[in-house]
Amino acid sequence: MKIYIVRHGETEENIKKTYYGDIDCELTEKGIKQAELVGEKLKHINFDKVFCSEKKRAKETLKKIYEGEGVKVDSRLNERNFGIFEGKNYKQLQDSFKLEYDTWTNDWKEYSIEKGESFIEVYNRVKSFMEELKKESVENILICTHGGIIRTIYTYILEGSLDNYWRFNSKNADLSIIKLEYGYFYIDSIIPVEF
Image (cartoon, rainbow, N blue to C red; front, top):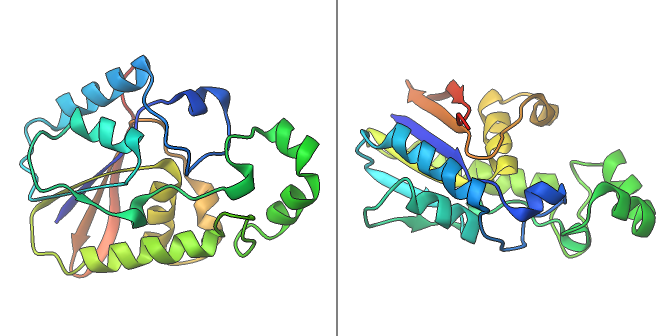
């Protein structure tokens, strides 16, 4: 099985470098072009199953890649909810939420941001999704999701320390190809969008 995972294209929140997951923003013009480029790369592939986050930016990206029916929208693919940190950049957090931010950075795995999620909560929902994928008996799967979720998928695949989350990046419209062979996932390739 091959799993093609695409991060959504650029958004205004990406440009502003804010912490955001639950904010339901749309793609910029550049983000739309990025999605179209990924669509070009994948146009020759017949997808047996397609999954997407609930967020507009992921859905808009997916529309440029896949025109078929039967897309399964799954909340487990939503980006982390940053709660009271949503839409704030680093400086704003230092100015307005210094205590909470410091607590979060000192306990980034377990600390649940007020009105948001902890990393462990996000990891557990991603793990649940990936465990279900293992049961699929299809050739090609497409997933359109978010950078933090893709890094969490890598962390799940590596099976070791959750600190592995910090050893990868996922840029807008990057394509990751994961393979499942003999009951094990592995990262086959990470392909940046050429833009």
